Image (cartoon, rainbow over all chains, first blue to last red; front, side, top):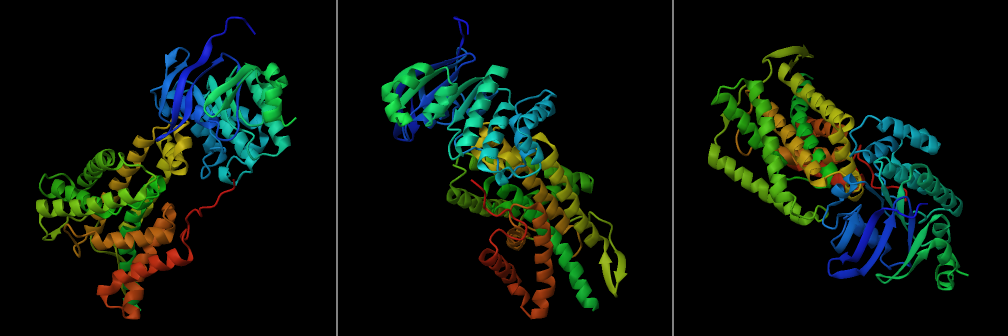
Length: 240
Length: 296
């Protein structure tokens, strides 16, 4: 890790919500090149809303800089084209489409001829997806769908991957495997990651830094190693 | 027996038109889970464009039909952009009201422009009979109308499964939000669906009236739409193959069951509605539709 890192994402005064209900009350955070950053928080803290603000799915104010360029007015399809991939909560696969078509649609914005190679690579990583390439994504198990959703997001070759509660509803052993995979992907491809999670222990285990979000404000921030030993966090999120 | 076979042939050629309109309905339904009640009127309007091009501008008949398909696609794309897209796609009631409004508006405009007197439409297929089965004549018209259905279904299937816009269309049909998150522009993709549906509808009307026994007039598709909606629902609303089976089945019900059961022909529309009701009651996802069940 070098001292001088470029900021991939630099967010300040972020406010946003749904209609008249404001969820995010103006906070700052940033993610540097190659980092894995986790945003922790309880239900309703605004974690999902934060990611949706970054990827343009909701109305938001403040500045959201992606490699220096303000994307706070951009639409989701524009933001995807700037290299941001978002795995929404609850998998967000396309249930009626086959596994293969889900991966192909992940590469929708690409115009190169390496899509098939990338797809093969993901089939190597997750052989179960190869076995089920012609099955409807909706027929996969929860864990398989999450693998597919992650692989599909990475098919766009993003420089920033947003993961919204990837552990939700999955068996612990599958979750551990999934997070190990995130760590590998981060190290192998250098993909910067912003993960929103309730499972603090797991997420901090692979993260460089973390933020704790409470009622739309950031309460605590710091290196993952510090947070994992922080008494307040241990009480609130680690159940010890 | 001869009469019976003749009725089968009649049912097939009527059913082919219902199947084509039903396929147009399926395209829109797949994308928006909305039934476009103006689909039949879009088709009628497109049919008139073909009529004008062929009879008044001297365009060769098939050229006129293809040109009319393109023009009606453009028109539908414009309507989608101005009247459909401003509304929330998840809120169906306003959209249904708009399609009903379009139904009335297009019908009225066609009436003003072309008046309500029926006009003979040039033939698209060879006239005369291809063969005779059991004393009943199978006309080239019947053969080609049924063939048209399969050609259109094949074309649409290729378009949906082998092209990038087709993939985007299927993605948007499956999940709007996830589609946006892979970079698909949802609006233009749905617009593509409206355009394709309009083109298919125009072809349907052109084929329907391209026989001396029928003529084109602004009300030509009003009953046809009811039959087509029943056909689409019978087939499953999101299945092109289902639309074909549904269309042909409704055509046969209309031409065989109705006369044999002794339903007055004025009530044959009711037969379609009864089929629709039975489907909704006992098999809401239709014969080939995707049941709304998924693992979570």
